[in-house]
Length: 345
Image (cartoon, rainbow, N blue to C red; front, side):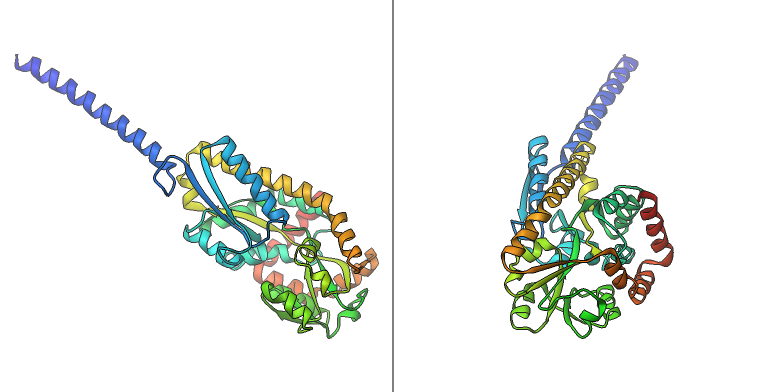
């Protein structure tokens, strides 16, 4: 009799433990994708500093649509720097206050200095070459670097292609910018680029730029054509020189712990959604360049397109800026980028 009860009890214990184990596993799987409200829906906050008219915002709208249509996600997008500027947004992602954002690698180099390699002046001869490098092994290597800083880098937003120079006098040669007060972002490399040409670079917050141009606190600025249009800089500038001195690489990031907390299925959806946004933005920007040029011309600006020889004259003076990039990112990485560019030309 005793043996019989011992067997029954043992069987009951095994069944109970198995049930508990299964219940805990189901609970863990359910908890893994819970959002901040405790529901199974994954809550996602996306912040960026652009306006609703920018391709950046439209790309994030594609991400939102993809996630909500293909998974159980609730996505809110906060444009216009509502949650802070680019650096503050990256810090918010790093701290887990929001889930996703995107900004230029110039800003992200504050967290990972090796990203400054993308600020090598005149590195990419055209956007097709840039995309081939970013979508290849070198681009993936740079994305992977961000995990050490608490980010999951998901892909490259174009960030509106090349930076161009707008001014109130025509610029065709390096001599034309000597002594010119040019607003730049707070970056040693951006300072070095214009100092190499004899200009006077002046770091200034983007939010203050229109007024600074209007009041002639600065003479010029460099930004993609999209921003010249969306920020109405054509009202306070007379010329745009297509210098193509920097291809502005943008990187989409999310909080690494948040990404790792998602189920494998939802991780895949997040990566697919960002890739859909990247592809949409690239196509949109490619088709919008002529529209931006026409808008600027209609506003009365003269657009100066430089020949390869004229661009070469600017590039030939970049050695001091190149040295700063090598110091920040490492000469080996600079050479690796240059090799990747040559390989896809």
